[in-house]
Length: 360
Image (cartoon, rainbow, N blue to C red; front, side, top):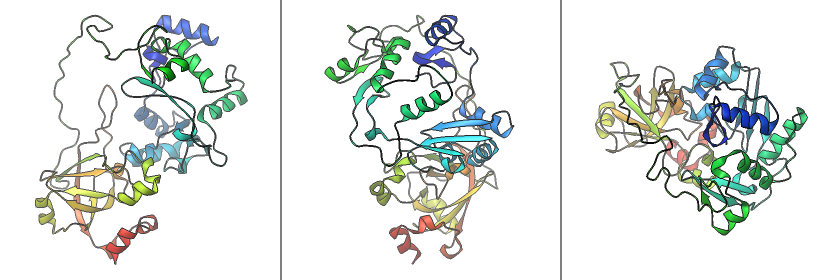
C-alpha cells in the first residue's frame, strides 16, 4: 500500500521514473522522488529537532520499539503528535490529539495476509461511542485540508483505487474475492488465478544473485558489570501489546515472568516467583521470574507485552544497517533480587488477584 518510505503501492520504487510519471498523472500532482524516513530515523530526527510532527496509526512504539527512553524523548520533543488508536496506548498518552479508531471486527473491507492472500472481511459490530472507521478519519482530515480525491463512499471504492494503482492487485475484485475465498497477489488480470508460489521458477530480474554477508558480532557484549545476555520476544498468551486489553488473555498471562536458568537462580539466591530488578546501560525494570532450563546459563528471556514491565527500556538502539531492525535479541544486563515490600510496583499491577496472593 506504499507504507514503506521508499516505495509507492505495489513496491514501485519512489525514484523510478515510470512510477513517478504514473502516479503524478493518476493523482494530478507532483510526486516526491526522495525516500522518506524509517522509524528509528524518525525518532533521531525528532530528538534533533528536525522532525516536528508524527501521525501514528496502529502502533505503540513507546512500548514495542527498542531503547524506549529514547522513543519517549522523541515523542516529547515533537511539536505535534497525533495517535489514531482503539485504546489509550502508552504512545497515545504523549499525543496532542487522539483519534478514536475502530478495530477489525468493526470494519468492512479486505485483509492481506503474510502469504499475500487478499480476503474479504465484513463488519460484525458497530464501533463504540465516537469511534470511526480509519479510512473515514483520514478522508475527513484530508477534506478539511483541501485535498481532492478523498470522497470515497465505502471500502470497495478504495479497493478499486488500489487495483488501479497496484499492478499485482489489478485482477482482484470484491466479487472474485468472495467467490474464490481470497486470491494471492500477484494477480494482474481478472482471468489470472492468483500466485500460490511467489517467484516460482523465475525471479523478476532474471537469476537470483547470492550475496555473501560477513559476520558481525553484536553491538553489545557482557562484562563484569552486565554479565547476562537478555533476549526478548513474545509469549503464547499474547501477541504484541494490544492483546493485553483482552480480559480473558490478560487473566491467563497478567504479568511478566522473566525466564532465567536454574544455575543463574542459584547464584543469586532466587526462587520461582521472586522479584528481581533487571538493569542495562539504558534503564531498569522490576519483574517476577520463572526458573527454567529453556534458557542457557548466562542468558535470560523477557517479553515486551507489559506496560508495567517495559522491557524495551533495557534494549539497545543498535540496528541492522539495511533494514534498521532493532537488535532486540542481545542486550547486556545485570539482575538483583528485590524484596516485595521494597518493590516500586504500580497500582495497575496490584489489581491482579494472582499477584495480590503472592504479595500476601
